[in-house]
Image (cartoon, rainbow, N blue to C red; front, top):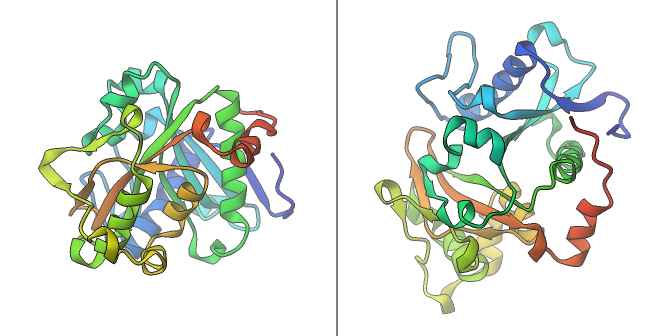
Length: 261
């Protein structure tokens, strides 16, 4: 697809340079900005990497005004893993945090989403919209039925996140047939505030924009949050079933013309 802004292009990563540019952006956002870390993070080269990267498709939003030689041109990224590629690895990335039995046993075509981020200079504009449009094309091209992935609240102080977590649990818990559950080693119950004390406005104000966007599209959350101390986040697993989307939101996907190979 071609965005209206002449300086933006969208495509899948084609080679090692593209992957390193995506990892550089991820380092800027997840390590430098949000204070995360990980065993394969390269602080010297400023790359946020893991062992799953070679198996994912990496959807890139590129600003053609920036220097590709300096790995500065990628300003938005989404990491995408189909069921077929997950079978090659033996598992989905999210399975380190969540029991995905409900999804795996559904017999439906799955797509794991992750590592979504946008450069600070490109937030608040159309960057995320372009990434979502390209994601819709990818979903149609691969006949995806269920999208899912871990999304994060910054920080690991669960008491500070009790209102948004409780609101998500009370109002957007996934139906049993697609309900994933946080693994017990870092499981955090989300029903932390009595139902009659949940303040929707306060909850939404404390919820990251990406999570709110998924919920507005008809997404659900799994049972329990997962506290990731290494990445300095509290994670929820979001699940989007295209069959359960509203007609308005489903039509957003259906009207796209898939062109990803």
